[in-house]
Length: 148
Image (cartoon, rainbow, N blue to C red; front, side, top):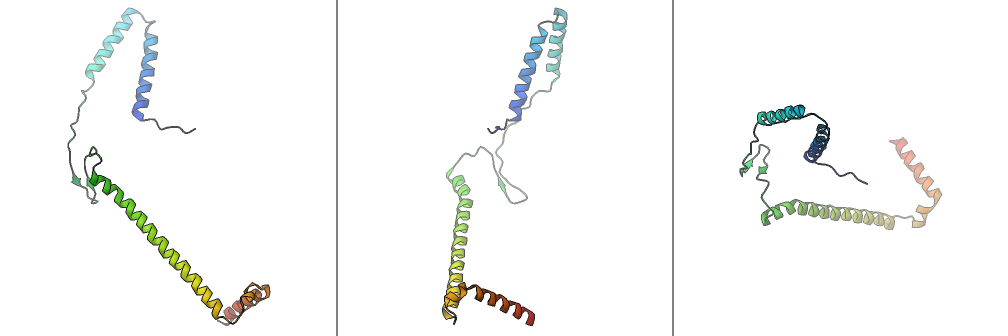
């Protein structure tokens, strides 16, 4: 079973709710004067907290130093953004097809070269399967290397 990642804000909210429930359960046993002091301390803490600043989002399109174009994240999926997203995928597929075609041509030319060498050679094809002939070829390679 895979664990799904939990967003940190959701985990923090869950932890806060759990602590709040435990503190509320523990505060039932406190006397009236202690609970009043706690209530006043909570009010002071909330008043001293800085106000939340709500930032307005502006649509800013700028060119970064590395040449990328940035825009607002809420652009939506328009026809141009769809084509811009599909273009790299299309280039990748075309590149892979060209590479596959080039490799197939290389394999075909290698096979043709081997066939041509077999057909123009004086030895019959059965000689290549003979174990003695393989040994003869190994000795020829060793002699050629010793002469060089």
